Image 1 (cartoon, helix red, strand yellow):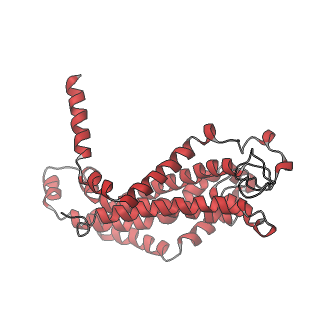
Image 2 (tube, helix red, strand yellow; image 1 turned 180 degrees about the vertical axis):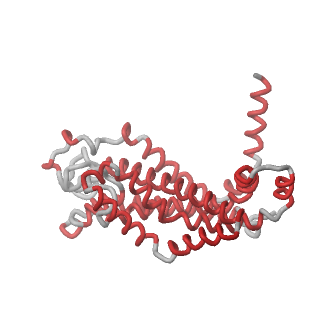
Image 3 (tube, helix red, strand yellow; image 1 turned 90 degrees about the horizontal axis):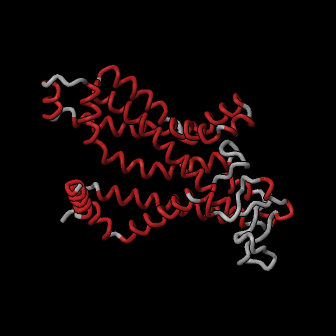
Length: 314
């Protein structure tokens, strides 16, 4: 028991004394960005317990409460709805909390799928080379020749047309994860491939081959850990891009349905009413979306600088 506690304390001391923590604590922008992002994640996860209202509970929604202004900006507001209500009478603050949960879920899962596809394809292309490399990279080049949003719109429209709007809405989160994940994997694949081409010429790979280790073990156990630094930076930025892609698709009517609020669908709903004076339906979700994407991008910039030895050095 004492040995386990000592080992745990030793690991904790190593983490506290690491360069990562040292430079992170010296960068106020990175600390503030991480604090805002962590707050958004906690609020999103705890939304079923801390949200004032449940936007999914149709029996608690009254159409007579629709388009009520925020309490802070109008005397006509209702104290039950601090940030006002949307066109269906749903509390804006609650829908933002639930919507942020949906947007973060889609963003993180989509990046996980991109990561899986990009790592497997990039490792195979870089390690085996030859015809396999040429085939996989040509497929990546073809996909990169189209914009990510164009691919996502086309695939989303096909899915929605084939499945029907009602069935699509039931699996909207899964569909968006697949659509955004499939649209963005080439960036990971090309980055991993470039790192593998450099790593496979090193002595430890040759030693592994001499020892008779099989290709999958060499690729995933030995080469991959040495290629993760650029992937970590890309993944951070890609979470923001995935959230933005979901918001854009939802705004175009190809993402989350209005019955399942996400930040993008909330902005889309409110855009129809912004010129009639109900600006809060769009503005507040828009501020949250922009802030979330901004702090994630700032964290990604800090990670990029941290892994660049020309920036952080004694």
